[in-house]
Image 1: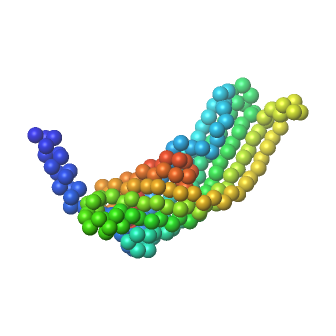
Image 2: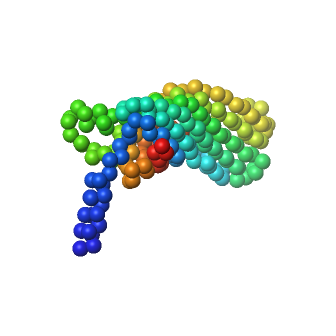
Image 3: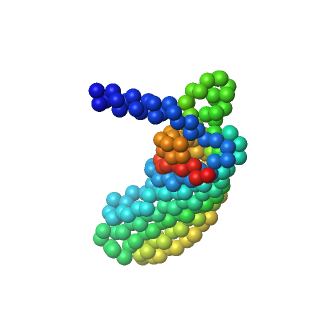
Length: 198
């Protein structure tokens, strides 16, 4: 009986929402990424600490199908040699850029003539134009060629254009959960939340 009431309330609640992406919405989205591809080396003899790939997106709705905005992101790795504590390797990336997004749930509903997604879902594909500031700080590492310990500190800026494929599910009129795939984020798989702050 309790289960039946829960499902009934949930179905009524979902049916009364009408919260798809819409024009003039300001969308704020904090995210965290997984499947980080920043480093593929073996660190078997190192203690590892990481700041997971995190980002913050802000977009403005231009019309019913298109939004644009910007974002910032950060991720960092630190590797400390278990045998030689002076051997510490640090890698971090700060990213920023612009994003343009096409929201096609409305478009699919307009073509079909039916409210397929009941106003609860936002389906979208984005193009991210990002600048990645990559910093490397390697201390007291062994150089086989010279058989000596050395240090290396470098910085590099890279420009990338990458896609994001995503889906949002609205839990309330202005709050939703999201799931994304694509290298427009710091990691290949990304999750987070969004608020319509208008």
